[in-house]
Length: 189
Image (tube, rainbow, N blue to C red; front, side, top):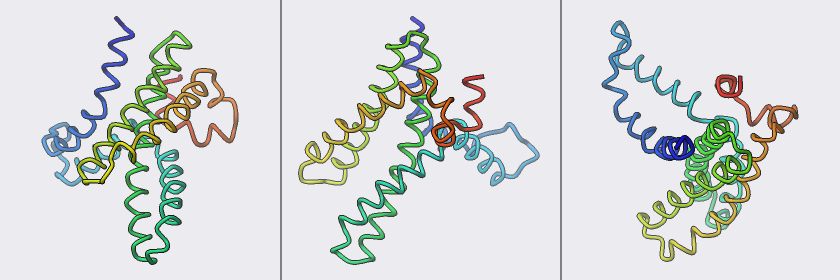
């Protein structure tokens, strides 16, 4: 039962994260703060506790540079615009998914189950959102534009889940800089 509650709770976090951005304006925790200060406080909380900013930035730069290179033949303006859009998308998706992997792996105590769940569900979320973006954007073949990302994300996220589960993300100095955040101390102790 704990296994299913951990999966369901973390799987629903992304929609809840999006909904919480909408309900920021209704927060009444800080009565002496202005609306703007409360909004910034909640946004900062979400960015630090629900996202891994370092991995989001790294992913955004790498994938954005690939998209920039692909679109460079259409001119600097169009390729720069494509870079910015891809950077923002990958920044938020990677930042959220890496933190989700960390939280899933820390909550499930069985090693291989934690690695499987930590790799599968974030890859599923990312693939479904990419498909939805392509489908809503009326890409001619949204499935063909999406399936390869799912095939790429699944092993990548599984390796990241293994790194968290085995402690590699904690031991290696280089990996520690990218994979662990200040809020990771609350999860791993």
